[in-house]
Length: 222
Ligand SMILES: [Zn+2]
Ligand SMILES: [Zn+2]
Image (tube, helix red, strand yellow):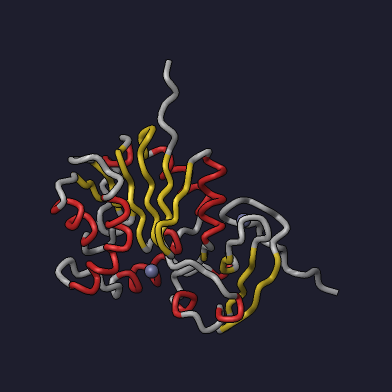
């Protein structure tokens, strides 16, 4: 008898008692009972060439009103919480930095980082009033490491604003458009992002579906 394939640990929280969720289109998905993440089997993650080709197809036109409205779901609640003239970082900005443009129009300063499109690592060596991560976290191959890195980029009292399509109903998972993008390898529930924030010791607000605003505690008074 052959040994069954190994059970992968949860890439978000590290739990080892993950469970098979389903196989669809030849891909195996797992679910985590601790943080409620769903994720593609790590052995089936796309290679960098496939990912790069797919990312160039993502529509990110800063002048597209529908795309701006889409990003406004995160930008609106975030900007309502920022002091005037805040400075931030758009992590995983992609080829067309539309969100940065919207935040700049509102008077904020925004640095860019994207491993493919804005690879200059300078903004990663400082802290920011806010860091945005939109339509990016579902592409993370090592989400635990990425969230740890993101948390170090936020100053005490600052914000980490995450937008990703929340996974809700396992019965609809197979036909879910978000799952069908082969570069989407990890799917978060609202509970998953709350779990991430809680592990960091941060607060987490969900002002609307698909948006989580995590806040690093202000530094304790000396
Ligand atoms: Zn987990
Ligand atoms: Zn995507």
